[in-house]
Amino acid sequence: MTPESRTTLEAARARSRAMAGPAMVSRAEAPVPAAAAGTAAPRPIASSPTMDERRFRGVLNAGLKYEARDIHFKVGSPPLLRMRDELRDTPIPKLTADDIRWIVQFLLRGTHHDPDQLLDEVETCLDLEGTARFRASIFSQMGSMSVVLRIVPNEVPSFEALNLPKAIRQVATLHRGLVLVAGVAGCGKSTTLASILHEINRTRRAHIITIEDPVEFVHKPILGSITQREVGKDTRTFNSALRAALRQDPDVILVGEVRDLDTIDTALRAAETGHLVLATIHTTDTSKTIGRLLGVFPQGEQTSVRYRLAENLKAVIAQRLLPRKDGEGMALACEAMFSNLTIQECIRDASRTGEITDMIEMGGDGFVTHTFDQHLTELYKTGVIDLETAKAASSRPADFERALSFE
Image 1 (cartoon, rainbow, N blue to C red):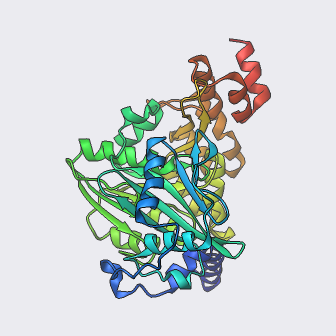
Image 2 (cartoon, one colour):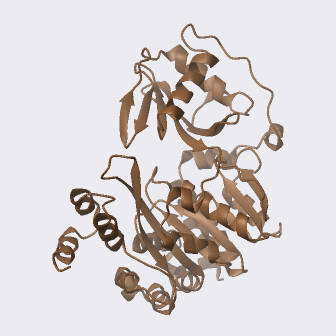
């Protein structure tokens, strides 16, 4: 690499780290405390006249009872439950600043975070013994703290429990390469990856390493060996843990999210050396996923990165959650791309990348593949979703309706 190329690459890495957000930068720059290898000593929790552990657990149990996806805690509002994609009030008095402060202290006890010195968003997990885990996002808004808890089942869901389409189940049969699960926040990416890991753990004698922020689903070894590391607790950053994982005899590596140049580059190197690498990315389809991956690299590296992606990107699962016609929760709709020679050529050749959706529609090479609209058609015809939901979610609504009228 020439000095000019090296300078350009370093500049791109700096831009990429900046785009990753202040929370990622603060974790990378702040030294991991001695307690990072274990658990910090619990801090005393300031009392609140209207909030204590019994009341807090009562709200959590209500969320579990009514099968909520998330629980919101905010000053001036009662706790809210997200049920079937809508927020519902709970019959609990409006929360005060003291209530929220108590909840934040309770969630952060035993961690290295000081509730009185929070400058960035913080994510952590709460384990409700024997019942469920909760992924907590703690943040400030309008000068006061707020908390959103995502409910994570204690049991890792199987393919059958989630009723995942066959296209997603195929990922567990792969042994090398990069697989990305794409979608917006809250669309179930982590759950999909957890079910894929569960299937690999159930069927293969493999060493599985997960790198997460925070750890959500806790996997117990079945046939495989499981190593789960949490950023900020067991390691400084995703990238440092990913580099170290290559020296820990892995077969499968899960990275919570790829969002910056260093992590994407290391993930590709891990795939190039014969490992199966699973990760999430905040994009909405295969073409946009490829564009996002390419976009973090400097212009002078584009051709080589296209060749690396063509060789190593084995699958992209882009998913959305849609309301079911029967009102019983949400249905998963997805685009499933599994690489073949034609897809590889479309990735290498910038002028053909726009053809990828058409190539997915055609399928081939032994894997089940389908576009969003093809899967929407299936979900509509089998009565899982109604026509209005399908049209609203379609990538190309006019083509979608036209295709239905010809069938």
